[in-house]
Amino acid sequence: MKTTLADRLAILQANDHFRDWQTVDDERVCVLCDRKFTGHEVLISMAREELELHCPTPQCKSGVHQWVHPGNSLLSEKGYDDWWRALGSSNGADGSDSSDDAVPPGQLRRV
Image (cartoon, rainbow, N blue to C red; front, side, top):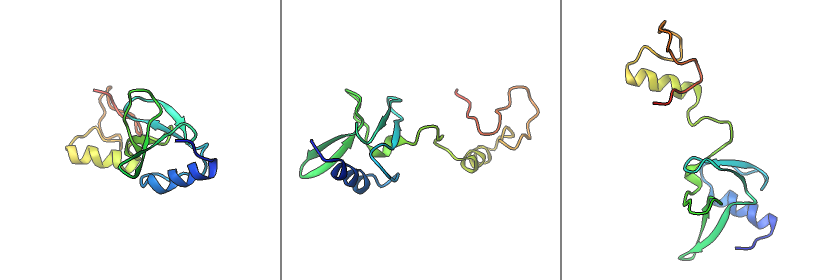
């Protein structure tokens, strides 16, 4: 769908209830395909009289709920600590575990 920059920004702002768009130059990262893109690249289409926003990567069908700010982890530091507490682990980000393979604060371990 072809749009003016002002219309594109208004569509992004109205249809992304998860993150704010200040300009069409704002960047997002798709958590499904790991692509970084701007509001200029977001695919906008109509489906049953409603606008849909999609990742610009071919074959990727992610929407706004699957996009994050670049460089921003999915969990905040507090959320990270809370997950460790909820799991009942002593490997929390507070450094309470003295083992060599403890996860440094602010980093998530891939399993």
